[in-house]
Length: 293
Image (cartoon, rainbow, N blue to C red; front, top):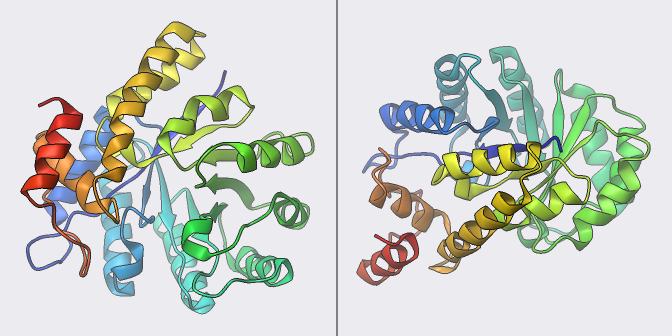
């Protein structure tokens, strides 16, 4: 079975909440040595919503240059201002990114017609590969399989979809509707524990945050599927299911993923954009318990 595990990378900050460039380089090296199939920068776990445009451009330049073709680079380019989304998408492609990932506009719920019109405009202006990003818990509405099919019939540069939804019902319907007509369209789950179900259902894998913490485990999962080693697939599923408890330590989950990485010895610190919280001693104890350290 062909599948991929792409890491939506965290964004390391220093104590002044500025980009920590050395930690960024160390993070990318850590993920690449762990064997992930790609790195998505400026996703939700990357705190794109709190980073100014010029800092985003700095991060894009750094990531593309440092990764230097060692793995795929995707860039989250979404903004509430569609002109900014288009500008950043063009910039990312010009800098050498392999594609951009665009979440649909958030805050107000939108009709299917408005969602389709939005992606029509972005796709027409984007000079590279475009991945759709569905995250109803953040946008307040769903990017439906039928809207997706309409978009694919119009835009050849729409090549994939990240579906961040608990469970597999929605992703399964997407696979059933899209894959018969567009078999090469990539459909990824956004939660790590859905990886195996996604692949078995005919999807393409996962863009999941736990791979920041355990890239070697996630890449081993991919290899287990490719080798049809279902015993190992099951064993890794159980390990991932336990690690998923990190997402429940506090809200939002980003600071706790960062703290888990720091506790594991990965060269990043737990600083997040304001007003995301810092892990307290109770949180740290819980994270250690989950990690078994």
